Length: 629
Image (cartoon, rainbow, N blue to C red; front, side, top):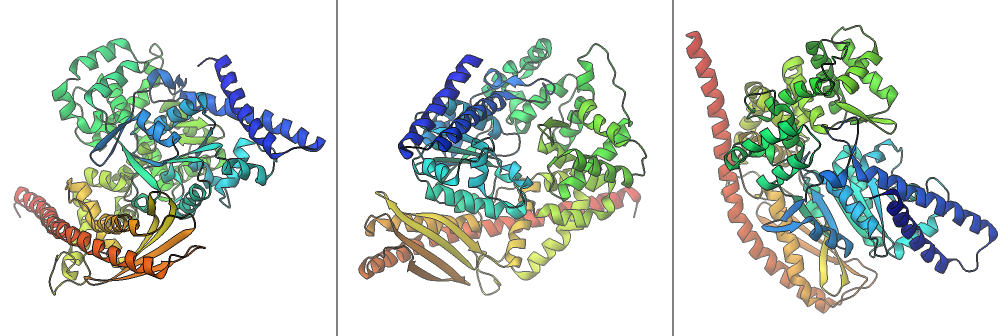
């Protein structure tokens, strides 16, 4: 898209806001006229700035020069259960006002799709202006107010008044695109979650989309539809390789071996855009493609360390640290920053963490020199405005795992306990790949013994010490706001610390053993309650201000249900009795189905733990045999 077209699109956006404001202010004062002129100038600049930012992307293969997104974009597909959707389907759903969550693993292409979405909507606004919000930027704020943050972004820091922004939101003039929910500091996620949901309920005429890694909390966003990024197919991977600006001979050679069998063998890499590109970059230097993710990152690191100079006619860059020392220092830098949940850095913070890593290894060298090694020689972090960010967060996770298992392994138990609570990241799983025996001994051994002793894995019967749902209560808010009836819009679940520990250990164990346990207790609970609400809603009259609060409490295998009128208007007693009767019937049937699934879940978990212990004992016996013990 050339500059002239960008200017036309920005002018279209500005005119849309002008038309909206003209209807709100008539007549207007001379002072307000000046402010309006300032606002429109700032808004047009915002449009051009975000367009430039979203139309260009930095990649592993073009770190020093961003490439146009439209030249490398490969159509993204999504799935929702067994149903599949194209990127155009999702864009149309979003534009039609449906609330959307896009979730996927790191490197799956979520941010690239969101940039494509913003450009698509910006070039054809259809009465709405897309606002692109990088949620990680909220981490810099002392007090988080998403509405104020969006308003300031649009106005380029010009004060135009809260009321005007709210009026435009009420008129449905904006499409909110929130990128990277998983990059919000953990202690702030609940607050950000509540604010996004509140905005989506307050401004029903606006459009909302949120992206993030897999997160159980998304299942409680009842007025949002969740779509998962689908893996690249063989044809997708080929298209991506063909499009990226890379050495033609290398691409041709790689495409010659990229056949069905090769794709199946390396599906875990080639189905991810990030890893597919990394595989191409390392392809020419490794006769064998590693089968493990950690080995793959190790090869990719070596490639990144030499790639930039290899493209410059035998130029060899001076480095402050040897490769071995650099690896130790950088992995320690990653472990410390990951442990403290720091994912981006200003200049001072960047240098401070480098200093901590150097101090640990007793290496005396200039901070600036090491920073240059990280950013220029290895290209593992890059400048983004005033911040330094990882070329991809997965590198931080890999090196954090490597450091915990190989550099500071004496503290492995402490680090694994922290990593285990970040179940949507890959660090714990990579720790297991790097050193499975250490992870078992320092983490799983005590946990598995505790689970077996407490009786959590007994699916039914008097020995069970907890109910099969692994929760004490689930609370659901329902809003009756459209012709299709009452829908569950948000939910919260309460469970005790032991139940949470059990589910976390089972989840981690299933990850490292690649065991498919099926739907877990929490998902079964949310599904049963949400479906029961929606199946029972046809007995209630339609309205805009009626609301319900439903709480299902569990005592062993027994349930207690509370249903209350909470809206400004109330459902009559007769309708409430009908709804309650229908809901109890629906819930009973759905819990019967879930109970059967839960039995299988617990039996599979028992087998999984037995297998894990047997493999560890076999390793122990093997070393005893070798040593003749």
